[in-house]
Length: 266
Image (tube, rainbow, N blue to C red; front, side, top):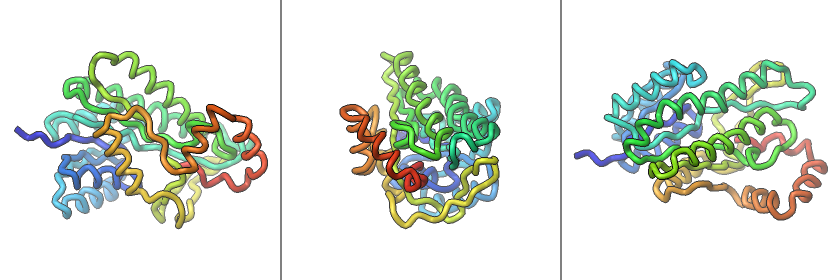
């Protein structure tokens, strides 16, 4: 009997998602790789297979409920079930709240909240059957709202409520749900986020911050240890602690240096 983990990672044709698929694959998991772009998806699967990893492409857009269900069904069919779902796919933005167009809010909320909900809903029967794990990749701005990322922060905070609600509903099922709060993370050279008018905004390659591979390793540890929440980076630990014991310090910090905060989101 094949006891290797069967893992679906959304938004895994590049970036952090690809590193998560790679991390699980290097630890003998069988992975389903998801993305919207066929070329990116093909290259990601080829690179994983070149390392001897069993990888299966499941192309589709998580923001479409039917496609989200098809992604999950395709992954479960290719892998013979699902043990782990990592909700990684997301969309970020930058800009002052009063300048952000409604279109940006719609896209960010649809991707980060509804996309996660659609995939998770479709995956719950498989994860329940295997008593597996559902992991949601969040951000430090899901703990506290930072300047210039209002829509992104709101969407990440909403995931907290979603996860806690599902966790309560699945109590006794032995399904593990985890929230991973990533901090400043290195990104791909071609990464784009949304500008205030909804147009693609290139995000300069970050030389600082946590390597994507470190976020991936944390996701793997979360599953293996069945952790409910993990906050990454020393700065993240400070923010999480202050949010509980001294929230006023965070407010002072953010009002003093708003122009330096626009690189915070994952």
